[in-house]
Structure formats: C-alpha cells, structure tokens
Amino acid sequence: MTKTYQYNPENIEEFSVDRMRLELGDTQVEGEENTAALCDEEYQGLINLYFNNQRGSWALAKFKCLEAIFMRLSYESDFEIGGMSVDLSKRFEHWRKLYEEQKKAFQGTSVGAVASLHNGGGAADGGHYFYNGMLGNHRCK
Image (spheres, rainbow, N blue to C red):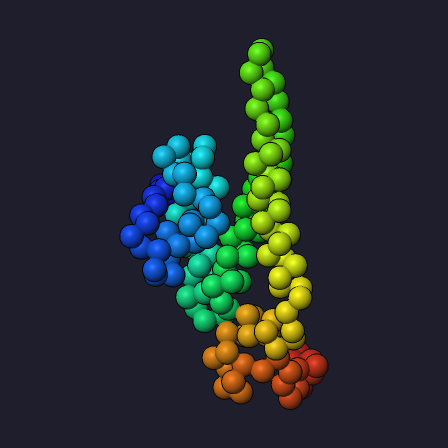
C-alpha cells in the first residue's frame, strides 16, 4: 500500500483528513513520514471507523487519531551522533499533552454524552446508553 501525505487547507470546512490534520497541527506533510504523524490513509481509516459510519462523533475520531499518534511516537528516544543531537522526546511530549487533554475531556463528560459517542445515536431506541436486556447473556437461551 502506498502512503500519501497531503494537506489542502481549502478542504477544512469538510469533515476530512485535511480538517483533522489542521485540528491536530499535523500539516507539515512535505517530509512525508519524517514530518507527518500519520499518513492520509491512516487518518481516513480512523475517520471512517469513528465518524463516518455513525458509530461516534468527530471528537471521538480526533481522540482516536491522537491515540494512534501517541502510541506510534511512544517508542522514540533522544540520540546523539557526533556533534548532532536529536530530541525526539520533545515531539512525543507535545502529542502526549494533546492526548491527555482530550482524554480528560472525555472523562469529564456525562454518561449520556459518552453513550452518544459510542452508540452513534442511530439505534432504534434513539441511542440510549441503558436498554432492556443489556445485562443478559446472549449466549444463553
């Protein structure tokens, strides 16, 4: 699979990869995987999974993108070769801070708000968190 790294600011009014890149500050795509946190296909996959399929919201898709970036960068470390040093931990700390802020925002939401993020609101009962039989074992007859 070919990875693409594009950013077009003309598309930020749509819920798209370009808008996600702008909101996360991941617009430096000229260096491809050396400067961008995720490729377009990874962003689009997460947007499709957590926003477009009515399973969640744009905020949930954004959180999941941050989570993927956070996990990808978590193994990077600082190093020095000759007189040159690279501080990759600073890059990681920036994304960790964004991730923790978004995580706190989700932890502070009410049960109804969290339910709407995960249930999509498209259920027959209107997307309620609690429903009849939710504690029943579907494996038992």
